[in-house]
Length: 185
Image 1: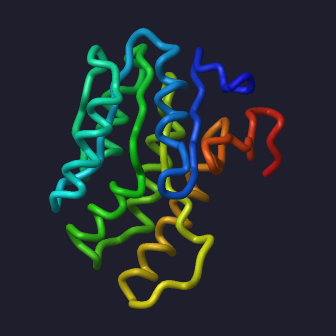
Image 2: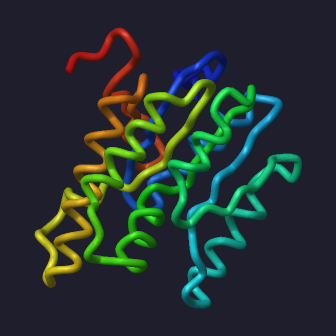
């Protein structure tokens, strides 16, 4: 990809896309330009299929990357890694949100979103966030499903506002929605 984002400095990049769109692959290619990388994995293996997905992601990552499994306390992890001089890749915010819903569907999601947005805004270093865009289809059936889609959409909006770059990926191709100072609010 000739038009890839340069990952040096203190850039925060949000990569959005649907399932199997290529967003994780793009995030990993961007992170590979750094020597020191911490990969924050948010997935929890609730079943055999998810275990297989996790195993595939593990096999695709370089072995020298540090791994931090963080299904719930993502804001705290970002605060700890801020200023560490390494690239931090979070994959993925959708699974983090799912874990929050599973853990406690009645919690204050506005507070959780704000807490994460502040951690991202204050992060010093290279940060790459991966998240699903789930709001492009039909309104889902069921209250919990609608709650999830709403929360994911609001989370993506809040993080897009504090990130320097926002990339939408479809069919493995990046579409830049926001590029640093070129972006409009």
